[in-house]
Image 1 (cartoon, one colour):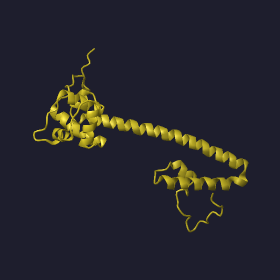
Image 2 (cartoon, helix red, strand yellow):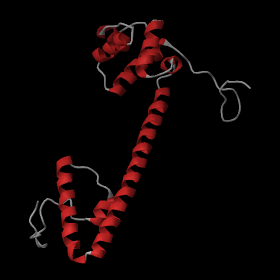
Image 3 (cartoon, rainbow, N blue to C red):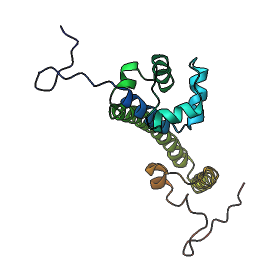
Image 4 (cartoon, helix red, strand yellow):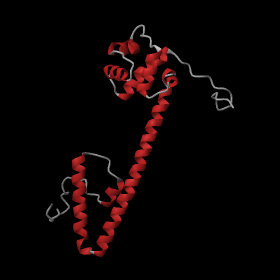
Length: 190
């Protein structure tokens, strides 16, 4: 069985073109994606065992003609960017797939985490309901305290997109002040 890539129709796919031009463009794209300055990239390359200075990074990215990248530097760049050498030397657009995959994986992981949190929050709401059913005389106070605590937490953390479940349960917790047509809660705050 061949390890040769194939196209959807089964014909052999062309190997990605590798070039210094691709590598130079990849340096810029990866550096900008990571939010690094040319100086930061030079420091990381040096720490990875491939000393290079900031002006050399700039000349690789922008020089006319561009500064050539030697093999040791190509290996160093691939290492600091977390790429294989083939990925580093391949067409710059190929990094988009890697970044899209990484971002998608991150969002899905965070979404799963959110779902787990929503499930545990739902369990907490069930406990509130059970307590309120057992002690109806304390239900209003319990719900008022929870609403105030959530309001304070929201203020402290700043604006976030809260779980819709919280808004459904406590639709007024995000309001800073009671609305004019609503009576204010006479219960003292802790």
